[in-house]
Length: 139
Picture 1 (cartoon, rainbow, N blue to C red):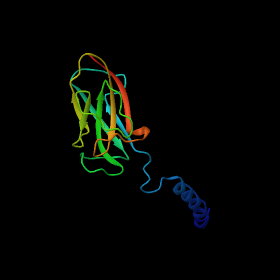
Picture 2: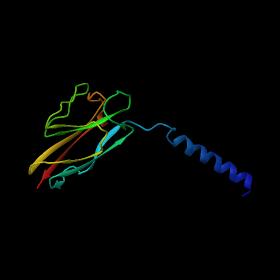
Picture 3: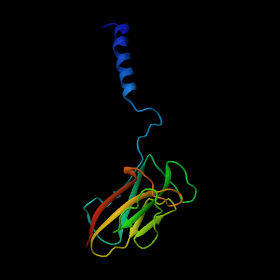
Picture 4: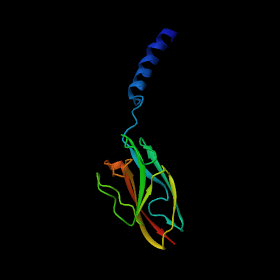
């Protein structure tokens, strides 16, 4: 096969690959999640929780910016409805400094944890990926 013919075969293949690749800056839907513990895990207290975000900027509370905010964990409480101000009490924990980890003192037994993204003013953001609920058991 000559070099000219190889280019004819390779060029269409490269163009096809480029067409299938995501566009620059196209990151998909925003998502927040528990990196650990895993759903269904048995853990000891204090429970070390690590959090993750994709296509969402985690930053300190304050200014309200599109695509950005901070995280909250609801312990044994429902997630807030989109548009509601997230309460702040023993069951609604705010990580307004942009934290992505925490140590939770939990009594032995089963618990649910809801991770929820809120904007700079603590308003629950809409979007299926901006909250996650897991169940854990503390020994």
